[in-house]
Length: 327
Image (cartoon, rainbow, N blue to C red):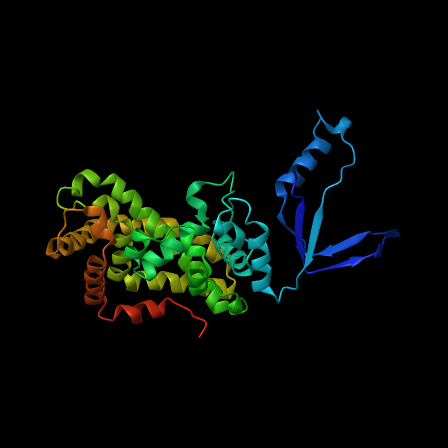
């Protein structure tokens, strides 16, 4: 009943000789895309103290796909198709996308782990940036997409091709400005949204009577925070990007992004909630169904108008500042 092992590689050669030994097949840039459980089971059986003496040679079907790195889209289609019989999370199939790997390298400079597969262990939770959570945080903070996130966009939807390509651009993998920009903003937006979520939990009793939607407003408050303190946030982002560009490792290590944004948000949180409360009170539509209120397009439109009022610019132009596209 075993489905075997599926492998992709840049190329393979048959019969190469290395160190005087003929190799049956040599794979370059190999990646197992299906069958990791089979490989781990075989490895365990061969080296586990309780089973290694009984281990015997086994026959397992192995499929090898030779796909050049230039055929990125075809490669992703093969990965998706190979895994479609399993309940594999959509974002797991994109974990080894070149742009995701580059983002991980940039975040690591600041001592953060970009968790692309949900498998990070032995790392402090506040030093982990989850790939799906970062994608949602970016949209809430820089694209003010709270209503979309509340109503229909979860971890799987955000990694469907039409959404994925709005943010992650493999054709800009050699554009250091783009890679640095998206990496820093994914990191910063995650810290912002996590800090605001924590502050909401800590202050629920204090604000809930005047602001019944308080507990469910993480996305809305995160975008509003960026609008209110855009100058300060952009300045810190610019500083972080410049240090990456300069490859100034000592100064990069001297920055503690979590502390910087946590301290600022905690200090400014009362004002942030006050602005949001006044906005909520001024909203004159029906507010009896709190959950549907936050999902409604009317509330979202009023929210966007508030953002424009604060920033003094059209929201589409503001989003454009934080968006790269393929056009």
